[in-house]
Length: 378
Ligand SMILES: NC(=O)CC[C@H](N)C(=O)O
Image 1 (cartoon, rainbow, N blue to C red):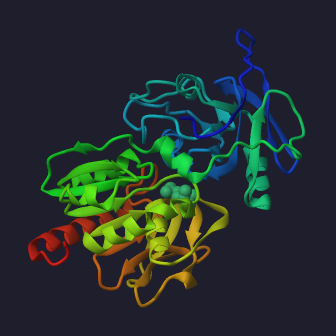
Image 2: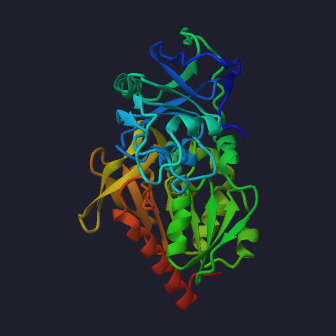
Image 3: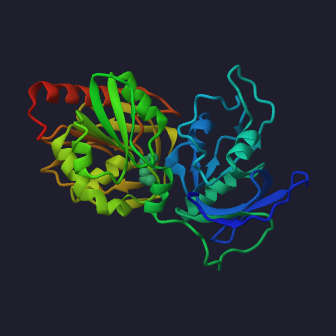
């Protein structure tokens, strides 16, 4: 299922590169050159400030339903390779870029950005003023846009086609469970749209991993006899996962658990906390977070638009373990008594720094000690 709404499938096949427009619901129009698939599309416009990592970003399922702006001015210079996709699809609904090179230079490069978009059937605009787009997104905070063939005012459009989060997650979750690896620790990865790097990090930590659809029942997961459960990243508003909060809470009370990004948000919600939309999110590879217990600051990879509201977290149950250095928002929590931790940032990196990869080590330590003590499983 396509996560975003295709507006117009009129094609311009055979015509040379033509102009295309980003039109915002607030009325601004930005001109660029069309690349990739030839259809019009709508979505929330977001921006990522990473200087590298465009391949990992566009294939990160958390971008489903969003028009992704690369703020770094030169995109595609080291090409795209056969190993760095974070999923089986380009998940962003469309991309916006400044200069896009057609002559990448890297020994692993396998395709250009334009070829990748064509193959994945995803549209984009290049040579668009991404600085102005980012300024507009920052000004309006959350803003939807359309990329269209002809300049027009979309202010009064009713049809934005942005799907409910449940549909976004449905478009990226696995259809049936799959098991990978043969390590000593069996981890169930609850898939809201997992990044491949999370699976890789677990496999590198001596795990056997069973990826299950996000709506798998508690009993089905229990029958897998997991040693631990990881709740993945994913697209959309975490509140839309409400029907699963009871299962999520029960799982975290039964098995050592780790939540990453959307996984962190749904755990917080399952325990009664609240989330809210941020002004324009954190998307980039250099977001500093402070460990509130050690005072150490880590540079993290991030991609989120929602955040857990700190004063909604029950301090008898959780401590806020990480906080964003810039805006002080919650970046991670640790349960007071259960082996349960969650992070808003991406310890698996890809793209971005892997300074916080130790979060996986800590999770596996909890999994191991729970197995040794057999005190956690019911
Ligand atoms: N990377 C993620 O898991 C993103 C979580 C959620 N969709 C958000 O935007 O906040």
